[in-house]
Image (cartoon, rainbow, N blue to C red; front, top):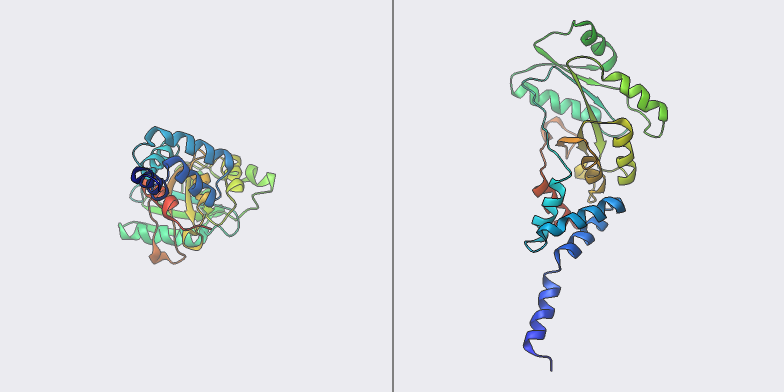
Length: 237
């Protein structure tokens, strides 16, 4: 018969797995790129004696930055993303949120509105929300064309990325298009968050996440601690 202390030790290990093992298993479930998952697991060791949640939150916080849109001051927001990312839904949500804080807004296609900004003819008291044409992320020319869009003074380009995408592809996309700030969509349609993590740990700031197609669903903020909990608690398969 095993000693009581041995039984207690075994039960403890089963019930409370080591933080790094817990984190590694969660990141694998969410299908993060292997290199990114390994770095997060390694960096989480700094808080490994506290809890898996604290450890992963620390590692994520070293690699992500949250920067919500300032809709009271913004003049022009240009949304750009691959086909199916949900730029139209995001545009509608931004317009609704801006109107709730008292802004006059105009939702328009990019070409004409960018020409107004370049000519200094845009209405100074109107927030222009613009949609660029969706692009094929595998087309090398798309990156060149995209880079020319964001040169209008007063306009910030926001990348729109779907959480349904492959995480490796998302990492390449953010790098190739040099997005500075992102909105990640379709969180209500996936249990795997690898694409989200890959998007926001590649150098671009996270403005918001979106979990539904309707304007009333709104845009949410997501910080490292909340993301760590989603990753560790999600029943991804």
